[in-house]
Amino acid sequence: MLTCIIRYHIDPTKKAQFEDYARNWGQAIPRCGADLIGYYAPHEGSSTLAYGIYNVASLADYEAYRARLAADPLGQKNYAFAQKEKFLLREDRTFLRLASAPHGDRT
Image 1: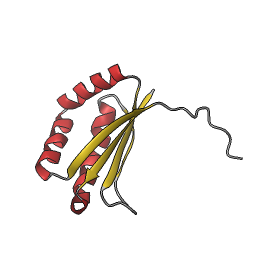
Image 2: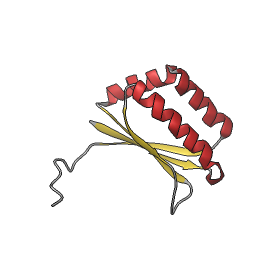
Image 3: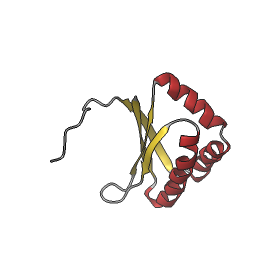
Image 4: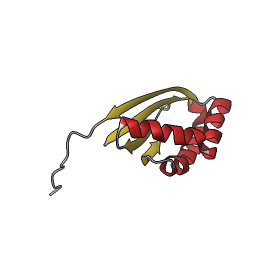
């Protein structure tokens, strides 16, 4: 299992647009085959950093998921929304593998 973490630099005056974008991905991403953990908007501290986090089984599964997302009507609409509103200033993807499992008890 791989975890994809997308770090977004957003326009701090357009946080509401990012949140709409995130809610749309909340519908499209699971439908297209990735295990969405969530999208996170700035709250305290940095006003420009936001994150999207989801799991995929492999890089091959990621490529197939991305093709389905690009063909998905809501995915297409969301990509166009981001282009039109210009709230995403930068976007970086990192793929990580969980190294701490199994986790211990919290007693």
